[in-house]
Image (cartoon, rainbow over all chains, first blue to last red; front, side, top):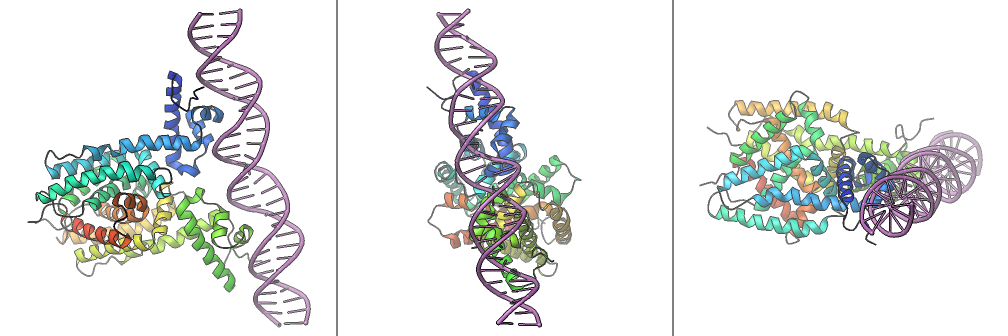
Length: 210
Length: 210
DNA sequence: CTAACGTTTGTCCAATCGGTCAAAATTTGC
DNA sequence: GCAAATTTTGACCGATTGGACAAACGTTAG
């Protein structure tokens, strides 16, 4: 009675679903939702298309499952932003963590970017619910820091947006970054430079230090 | 002999090609290249599909034409970044101009983001040629400012990347920004807040002013 | 062994895709 | 006004798409 697309029961279902999601991440992030085909995903997962559709009801089913899991890990760094500890240090390590995620999980970043670019047709509820709630929460923390004079008084929402933008840029616009920088400096070097720059930017901006 | 897809000769060809490009911008930016259909574009342009294909050889032909035009206007603000005038003022107005473009031409921004996200399959040569050359040029200008002690010594490439990222974010991730901020503040208010925040960030970072 | 259950595949289908083509409708040059 | 050139359209095509389905295959418990 229970279809495998409900709740995985056997070990093999658990494994195959993971395999499919990994393959789908690869294909979706590289081609977008409409650009990806079920055949491509099935190929990448090493199985036939009907077999894949035995584990997931539809192409969209794969995508929403992927997005649901993604958002959790994607927001983890922001969740860790905590009131304990020095504000400036907290923010710096948040930026570093986000930059590390752009380096280590570029496919996840691009998958998310693709979805938002298309108007978030499949994750809008999550944005207005889970995401907004978390951001609102952290904005209060940041406001506290500002009131205490620990960091400059500025717009906390746009502060968070700017951190998202600058860090995810290195995953989403990777080919552009590479095209501009040339092949001289490898991926590690690029992220090292980016980390150093962002630290300086968020610390004291562009005003010359004397 | 000359097909209209070569060089527009008549007034009507000029007009219809413009009409198609405008419609294609709308459709491509909202759905990506593979997500957009020729029928959609033809519909948006108020003509039949075969008629559209009389003015452009193919779907890809429309896209490359669009991208070629786009890159020029897209890079205009950076071209204006000049050695004359106060460096800090120059950078501030570059940021402002880029932010205004994100506000006034979000479709162009999303079209570009879509293309880069997919690995820039149709504009890679432009990135490695035109774009890289321009950035290299402006990086030298910025380095001069740093040597003169006018702005802080930091990585000029990543400075430019960060400006691109923070400004275009408001076009590319618009739905997310709106979802997080809620409906309270209109589009004008959002961009006002963003402009103020970015000015403060690039001026003195997050260090509290006392 | 065998019945029940879970897994895999080959085949097929309707819908949609980008693009062609010949013919009709319209505009233009003289 | 009329012939030539340009513009527009309906009908059509092969390829690809997401998905359905029944039959075959494998596995496991009794």
